[in-house]
Length: 298
Image 1 (cartoon, rainbow, N blue to C red):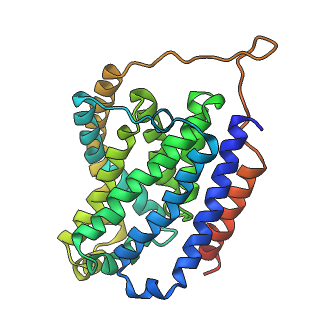
Image 2 (image 1 turned 90 degrees about the horizontal axis):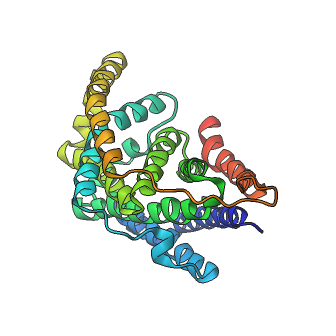
């Protein structure tokens, strides 16, 4: 079995484990006694920690090298902080557009998040997902798919990151931001390049939820026409593009591309492995059954 197929097989096992544990926890008596954020915190720990530990025990890979646990440096730290803040308008626009077709799970859980308290909610929604999802996607997957080539590996882990959300509303912007995160990690050779903006994006959502009551959000959303909301998001997104371009230029200047080591096959051509496999096809089927069909049939 090639490295790519082993990585895809682990991804499939993770998807199955993730869904199984999520369903099991929903029926546990403890779940009904926890607040929404406390439940999310507990589920993050149970869904991610055992598979991550099992992977490194099974593969015997070096944790630091696989996850790229390397320091960022102060220039990258400032650039990525600015990026995490500046990309918010585009993220909001993408989320709004997909929410026109599928319900937004974050909006549906605003009341439950607010009742949980800020600290627990911030850890459950911003900190743990940023750490665990990045270790899985931009750590294990991005490293495991390196035989696909740099950009195909980034595409592959972004695709699986989008599918992991098991939600058609979140898939488009999760895929796009997942590809960007993979690019940031590749250029800096540090997983903190994706953990930091991921945490900022999720954390901004928590700050906005606690800054405004759920009643106010619902009333404002009902009173503001869809066309006005879309127009305002488009304007703000367009205004953010020049600054994002500046940040990209500064980031690329601070992080020139490293030399990609090419492995050659027996014919002397660059060695590349195939991404599509039975495991990947099964993951797509899982997304359709558990992620897409419940919304289509509702």
